[in-house]
Image (cartoon, rainbow, N blue to C red; front, side, top):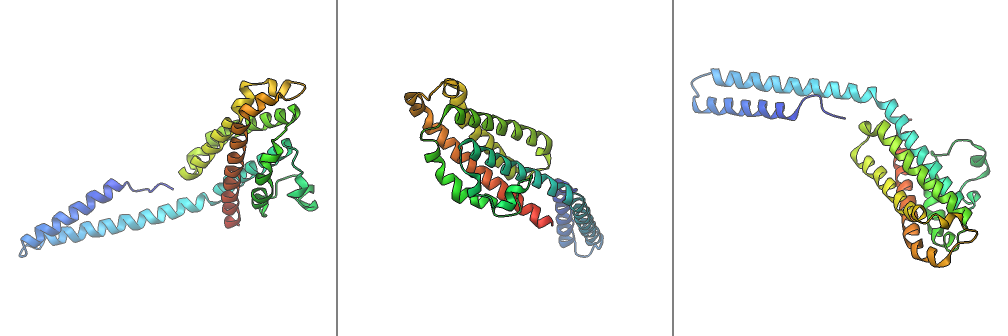
Length: 233
């Protein structure tokens, strides 16, 4: 949340107060300078108090919208992790119980992201050892969708988000592009009747590395925003 009073104004008032105090010190018989210094000090304190009140009021106005922003980002992370796991033929029942599977919306309030971290990410290497063209097609579609959604979220919410959060979202975008690039450059991986082993061996390391990093960033993104949602009640 930006401050309502520019820092430069505070610095100027502090400098003026210091100068007036110095003049009063050099001319102790003249009460004019100390009086000006005290007035400047009272002005500075008054501005600080008003600034804090305005800032608190502004923060209170944005509590609910910021909570909704956080829920939207956490939901995005949960959905995309689910789509990635499904594209790699990972059994979603290993992550969700029956009650959670019945729900239409992702269960971002529970330990979902921790489950992805412990149960899904360690399996990515094995899941991508011998993928089918259909699986790579689904994977490419998921990666493209992630990059498009990140663009939309940043365009819509970027001005309200913390810079660290924006950096994490940009990292998600970069990871999705790293994993997507080989599938985009070599479309025969997704369209052939069978995977060309020599071609897959040449690009699989980049794809696997990008997917693992992407999932870890989505987990970190979802976990942080789920905490914001819970804190807001």
